[in-house]
Image (tube, rainbow, N blue to C red; front, side, top):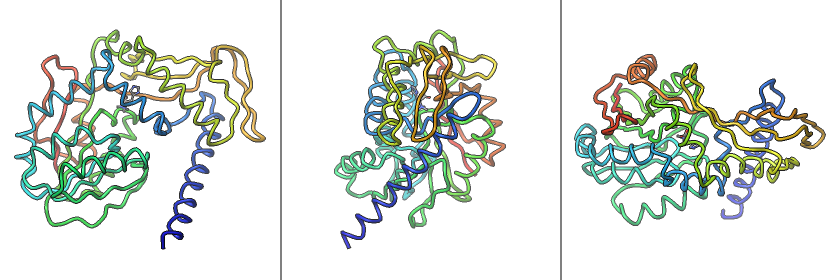
Length: 320
Ligand code: AVJ
């Protein structure tokens, strides 16, 4: 059995690499070259992201944790006893502790994450501290259709913190929240964090920190593409770029070619002009009204919404 699982795992890994390669080839063939941000999170990228969350300039994590700490009791009451918690893009599973501590007899925790080893290490740490909670990790790209493991009769509560929703365009965000509603079912709740629009200088500093951690996070994507799909990117010939696009109310991250150059992936060649970019991420910044309209279009009603004292970040409790 162990051996056949190894083969199944190998096949899954090969398939993931083939999808990655296809996404990269497609993205680099567009007029505006682009690679989806979910590919940031290999092991090095997941570690760099955890460092980003502790940067002085990166306020979202601190603001959201403050909200969750201040409102944990209220959130726990809203969810009721025996609920199962499903987290979309669980990463290091640190914020979920605040909810698990506040919930009455949580039945199960279902982390869903694209970065399997990182997720399993996090779940192993969590299991030690919450022996009464069934840990049911799902290694998957949560932007694709996911199937939940069988859960008990308690309420299903989705958890989607960090403003990861900001990675989607508004249409894709609506479609994704509708999909989450389908997965969780009628009578479920969703605790979701989203970043609020604010002064552009605060935003740009958060995505271009002085220590260069965000730059390393962005550039790591090229190292990953080289390693996993055999490209010949020279990471030293690209630089990190982050700016606020006010018209779209989003931070954009790009990798800018510092010179004219050509990059090869197998038999494919990609020409870069000097100054040409690969668009690697959007991070939308919302007004409370815009976010609620989006949630409503996706079939969710709002129960409560909280912000931090500065009004920089928001957490909403939705239901359907
Ligand atoms: C994980 C998507 C919420 O957009 O702020 C942080 C990712 N990128 N710094 C964000 C990110 C650069 C982050 N999200």
